[in-house]
Image 1 (cartoon, rainbow, N blue to C red):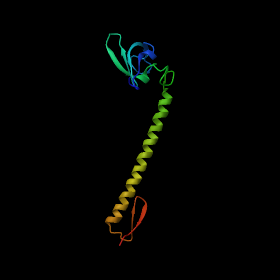
Image 2: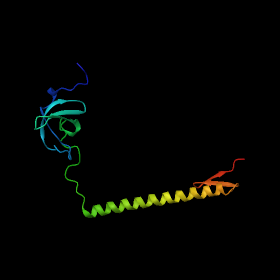
Image 3: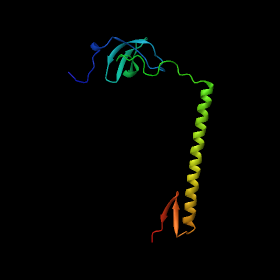
Image 4: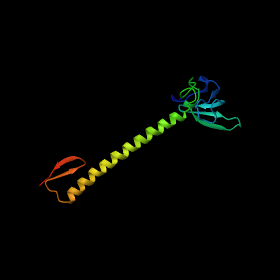
Length: 128
């Protein structure tokens, strides 16, 4: 007998799909087999389907996510969009500044500035 094999004798013969956005959410289905990570259930049309164990109530869990509906208001959506735009602008500014620093350093090196070259704001002594 395998030590990792699961048997239906420890479980009910039915399970409910608890994954919120799964098309079968809330439906109670007959279990055909139970594995460590997967459960095989019989669908209403008689066919069988594998589903992740954590998406069912096999282990007594009745909800895999926050309870209730997560609805975002129009104001909340606007705030989220504003935050996204601010983060994107900040990232673009930082990339522009970094690009300018690299371009300046490259032009200094190309111009033959032998005393000292600077790359991305980090001074580097000339090696003779």
